[in-house]
Image 1 (tube, each protein chain N blue to C red):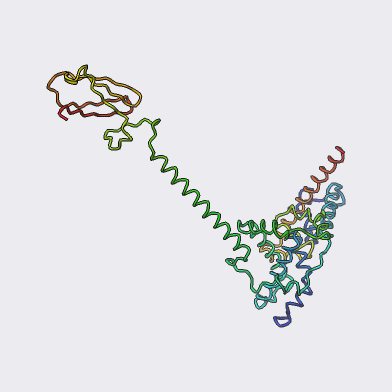
Image 2: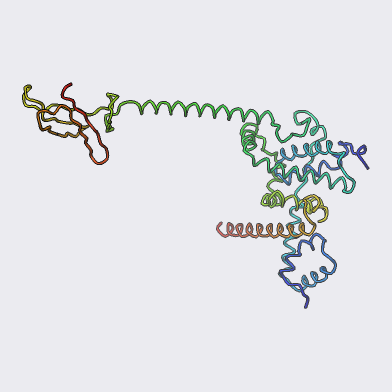
Length: 177
Length: 194
């Protein structure tokens, strides 16, 4: 399966939903997820000739997706982008999610992801949501498979700590009321 | 008794959850799991968290046409130095604000500079060479009792303070005098011929 058989439309039909939901889980924002998904497929269409068959198309595609999301967080930190986003938030009400998205956004799963750094989210989602093995994740994140395991261990302990703290806070609130 | 303790168990727990454990480690891990209730509970909690994240509902992806068409289309990947029209508008506004603020600052500085040049009677000023009358706060007057007398006594007023000095002798035509109050000094020349 080489270049000619990878039509952008068929790639989107096969992977579009997963890429979009990966971006949503990474960013926690519906519109950002749409933008990044679009960006991913534009990149894919431009770089399809550089794709080597020593990795699967999905590994390549999701690796572009994850990198685009991490780049998005870097961009968000820049001053110009901060101003642009403030503009967006104030005038376009861009970040107001619809009721369904708002429900998901408030889910405990999203709350947990929100506590992690972009890289931690990426590693966890590549394993938990997309089911890649350590070796594949290592290639995508430029690290060794053993380091992926060690990082996942640290991430899971962090989540456990966060959940325990949340539980304590809830118990305290219940005791007060 | 197996060789794995709770710390090693905890270090390897992700490898177990993700089925990435080496077979020789797996046996020891499972043995420890049977024996240690605390580690068993920890594993259950971690697996529960994994399920919580896995079960985040799926959102429907935007359609191909939505991704490809209308205002969402981007004909090229944005390069590092390309900016959207919105970013440009914001940057342009910021530049305008900056120019306005700079202009305001410069005009204020100019006003303050002019203020400094105006005479200030409250500020004492001493000058060896009083070229500007505004700086001269020294007056000297003859202290002679009658107009026919040679002026031998003088009164010197330096700002608010008054000094008195006397000149002895009749042939004195030119006198040089230096006054000092410790911090500032002033020299005077009096020519009787003028």
